Length: 438
Image (cartoon, rainbow, N blue to C red):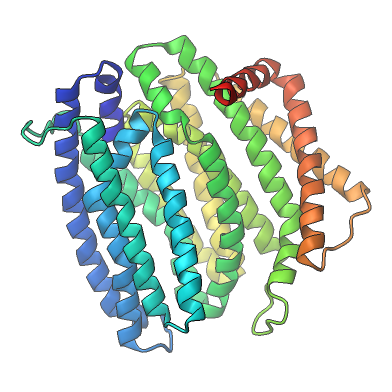
């Protein structure tokens, strides 16, 4: 909600309005931070019983509290600063800082593990590093935007903040219910299976979202200036770019993931990590999330939190109910089935909502693009099936196969989109050229 409220004052450089919105936002998120503390305390007490783990209660409770510290710092110090940068189309500042923090965390974690430190010590150091990011972001934004603490909080500008918080709660439930149900219903061995697939497919999702996630601020700026035709053109272009990346990355992942896991989990015999149906459904689930994200970003840019709040809770409820039912009949794949159905319902709701508001375009535009994406996936699979690929048994052979598959997927997908969505592809090429020239 804060991001949507900031688009207009940022577009017209209204620093007093920006300060008022920022102060109101900080007050709100700090309340959320203390609510999170209460949640973390309760979870730390009951996590051992919930998970059924054999680890000591003192260990599990300490680990939960340590992991919670960085999230608390993010809400208390950094989330408003991140939102301002995103609204001003300068999210690269937060992204670069995140990259630096991840590199630092990886290096320090490796050193501590090699020194024989316990997981609690490693995670404590990791949390300390992640706390630096919101603190630095807060300092940078205060200086860059000349924010004033003496400006009264503009609560009216973010009057839908609790609707936005409702969206966040629903989003959190929808995105975390899978691992919760797997933990409770199937046990820690299946959690390890889920974690490996999530590490791979979730990482691909993060890459795609990062490459296509800069549109919301631009959408918000266009909406604030009533540039409806420009908004439709740019959104169509972002859809094409997103479709290309989703098809290329996720189809490549679906082809390569099982060879990678076979190499990664070689010598581990406690449970079979090669689960074809589960892996395919995981890829589909995360790909749908990325497709939905563009529509979600546009609706948030327009500030339509209250209007779409019911849909957010319906999505979460469908996911919870169906996953709980399906897990008893289908095991771990039942959890993903629930998520896929819930995400599909939400995506359809977005398509119908944008037909009536914001874009005012026909629903067939979405379904035509969906058919194009499915055509691309089919062509890639056929081509890779025809070519004489062998199963990779080492990391080097896997990397070589990954490069070949990625090139095939990229060539086919780009070629099809160039034929069907030529104007969009040409526009994307011109924009990328301008970015590299700058």
